[in-house]
Image 1 (cartoon, helix red, strand yellow):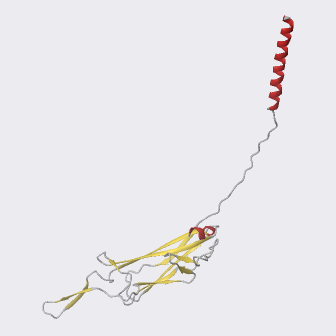
Image 2 (image 1 turned 180 degrees about the horizontal axis):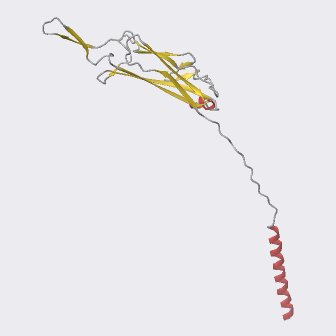
Image 3 (image 1 turned 45 degrees about the vertical axis):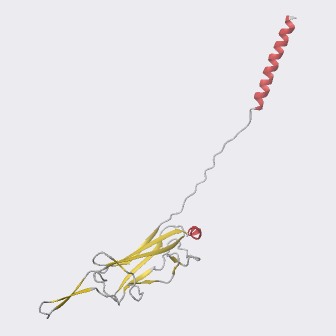
Length: 201
């Protein structure tokens, strides 16, 4: 009787070991792992803005000063280009002056070139806003502007002094007009990757 119980215990233990062996066997599998490297080389995005300009020190009404601004794509990514301008006049006393005269003529006449189109958003686009020109690698835009002319009708603001004997009248600048004034023209150039221009600009 005891021998039979012992045999049953051995059978149960052996069965348990067999079951563990079967379960352990189901967890074994073949496996491989591989790494595949994919390299992505980005393009070179760069440009050069060239300006030809000599600041005049004795600019008088009717004078035209050459000023040329253009952009060259020195990278290998196609780009689109746009530009904007900001102007200001300040008299000798440091006060702001109007950009136009009494007849609404501009005090500084900017010569814009073909190939750029003004848009209502205040920018000038290389091409048009709806049909931008591609500035490819190594290519240069046409000049954005080529010169600025001082309005020939600009007037000085003078004060008059008469000598005590009345024989001499002296006129001198009172510092409030366009004589001895400073005109500042700021040109902002923006470029963008060409295939993103229509959705961004």
